[in-house]
Length: 128
Length: 208
Image (cartoon, rainbow over all chains, first blue to last red; front, side, top):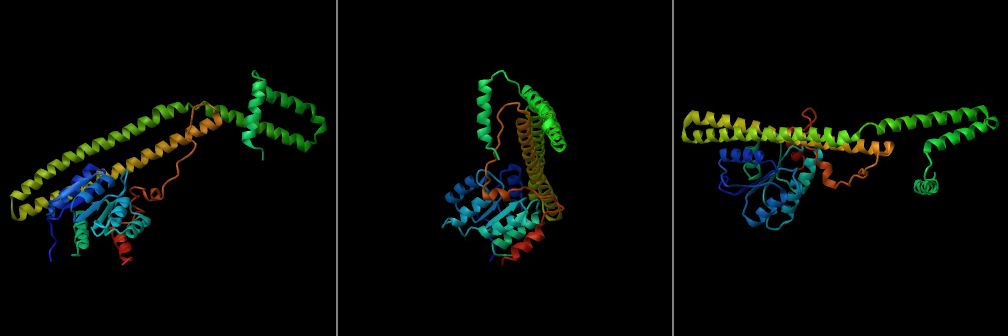
C-alpha cells in the first residue's frame, strides 16, 4: 500500500518563513494539498472544518500551543486518530515525554533536514 | 518580629503629628541620647552600638547611591533600545530569508521543467537551501529569549531601586504564577547540551 499523497496536510507554525519552508519541503516529496495555520486555535478551527490526513505542528505558539492543540485533537472523537507530528526547537526530555503522553505520533527537533521530515511522515503514515 | 504593616502605620501617625520632622534629625537625636547613656553602657554594648551606627551609615549611603542610579535611563532608553535592535534583527533576517526562499522556489520551478540528473541536482540544492533557511526560526526564538531576559533584568533593577532608593513610581512586585506548561516552553537549547534527533528517536522508542 502506498502513501496517499493527495491527502490534506495541515502545517502549524507562528513563523511564516517556517511554514513556507515546510510547505516547499512537502511539495518536493509530492504533498501538494497543504494548508497553514499560525497558532493552535486557528489550526483547531481548520481541523474541525476540514478533512486532514496529517498535522505537522510547532509547539511554542500563542495563544494555543502545539501541545494544547495535540491534546484537543486527541480529545475530539472525530480528530483523535489524525497523525500528529510535533516539529519544535524544544528538545528537553520532559518535552518529548509530555508530547508522547499527550499522544504525539512523532517528534522532530529543529533544525531538521528534509530526510528526517520524509522519514517521520512515512513512519506515522505506516510505511516506516 | 514586629509587624511591618503595624510599624508603617505607627510611623505614618508620628509623621502626621510632626510633619516637618527629618529622619536625619531623628538619627542625630538617637545618637545624642545614646551619648548621654555612655556611662551606663558596658564596653561591649558601646562597641555594638558603634557597629550598629556604622551599619546604619553604610545602608544610608547605599540607599543614596542606588537612588542616584537613574533607573529611568534603563527603563526608558537602554532596554527599549536593545529590544528594538533585536526586533530589527528578526525583521531583517525574515526579509532576507523570504527573498532567498523566493529565489529557491523559482529554482524549484525550473527543476520541474527539466529532467534527469539536472533536475535531481537542482532539487537537491534547493532542499539544502530550505533546510538552511530554518535558521531564521531558531535565531528568532533565541532572540525572543534574550528580550525576555532583558525585561526581567529591567523589572528587577526597578524593584531594587524602588525598595532601597525610595524614588517612587510603581513597580511590579509579583510575578504571575506560571501555568504548568510554561515550564516546558524554553525555546532552543544550546547545541552542546541539547538532545539531537537520534536521542529523541531513542527516547520515543523507549515508550514502545
